[in-house]
Length: 207
Image: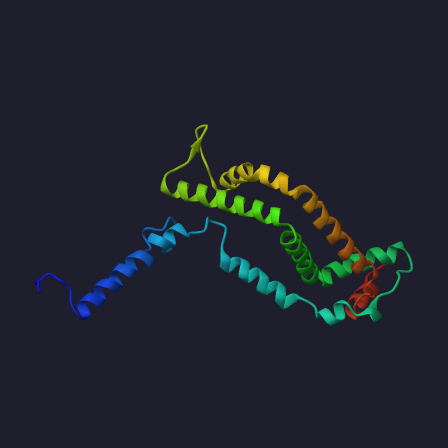
């Protein structure tokens, strides 16, 4: 056997070092936080972080009110006048803002799932942005003498995928989501009676 060929533990060490070069190198990552080789290609642009999104969702889940009380029919009644309705809406939005957020996200998800063309349009947008971003990592992208930043890259991806969004009826989908959200949240906030603590705050406020 040639003397220069790795064997036994030396071979394992050599393989580990190569794997470390591929997945664990920090210097090759654009931000210096790790990820050469394959992981460098999967690097998310600055400002986009999976951990940040997860942290935001966790905070919302911790502040969410119990759904049983949220939809309890015994706590719904017609407001006596316009002023009481406005007070209910303001206080209930503060109290149930996390519940309303998940309702809004659920309506968006339903709209996307129920429209295959919209799914295709979103896939085209994400694919276009990903390709443009990878190209910008390999070499600086310059248009009209200006380097493309992440917002510019997203705008370019949006322009590329705009015809697909138009064919998918994205405008109608956006108006549907906004209309359904305003109707559901507005109705709940207007007819849901205030919590006991909110009533005490209103009574303590000076007239």
